[in-house]
View: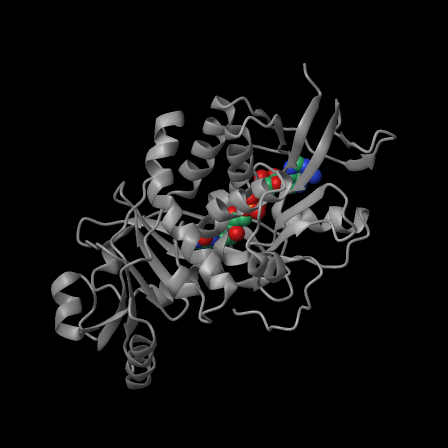
Length: 373
Ligand SMILES: Cc1cc2nc3c(=O)[nH]c(=O)nc-3n(C[C@H](O)[C@H](O)[C@H](O)COP(=O)(O)OP(=O)(O)OC[C@H]3O[C@@H](n4cnc5c(N)ncnc54)[C@H](O)[C@@H]3O)c2cc1C
């Protein structure tokens, strides 16, 4: 087995796999080391919303980065299918952010004034488009660009496509240490094998904090647990993703509806609680008229990797080591995966960078901005 690679990527979630794909496509020799199964961390727990407009409020570098990433899904959908035969299940029907109270109507109508891509839909239009929503709705903000994908399929498609271009991908291979060699390379130690790489990418989600400590990097990551449920019902039909009061309903192409997600800080346990699922049901029942007869299919939970200011770390080691960080994608790692793959690829290959992005996601940035819930 070849144990010497140009780039060693720690973590086989959607971020690590996107980076592997972009690098392997350029002919770089890449190894991905995943401690469990591909996608088994936050990636498989995600609802898959591409919520650039619905999740991010300020029109800053982070928003521009998210919009570019969202757009990339349109080309990636065909490209990844060509190399992997996996359909990432991109659905582009947009999102409705509902208003039920008067002050919600006012707040959402204000947003339309500032963003040309957003529209206000009256109660009548909303109910005409989505007849199974409850009659109590006053209207909705229509966000045409915020579609969704299947995170599990995206991760698998990146992985298989990276492999198509020669990337080696190892599951059940946790990296314990990163050590510099006399030849200025890095040894990644796993329980059975040592891998030597010229560059290392740390992309192991909320568990990246372990390497921050090992490498003496300032910065922290904390888990924000999210619980979800899936149901099906022949009485409920939705075209668009529905969002209300921090709760969303995503109509998946296979007939399932995914409802998410709770926000529990500093909880490392990945089992959903009765309380968490109950709170989701309480929020969703008044929105959907026929919810009582729906069949509950399953429940699950995952850990969002949150940084102090809610923006990811995407950049090089502050001391110029050939160690790169792509972590802390918090609530939007599926949305941000395509553009993160490109940015890390270009950093490693020494290509020109968008300096605003470099600064916004740098490990050296000042963490002044308060995180959004
Ligand atoms: C309930 C929920 C809903 C979400 N919904 C959305 C959404 O709708 N849209 C969106 O854009 N985002 C969403 N997210 C966020 C998104 O899931 C994450 O931001 C994204 O998955 C992070 O990807 P990642 O690859 O960095 O981390 P992960 O997917 O967690 O992958 C990290 C991987 O590293 C592995 N690993 C850990 N330690 C080691 C080690 N030492 N060696 C080797 N491997 C290691 C882990 O096993 C894991 O597979 C949601 C998250 C949750 C929890």
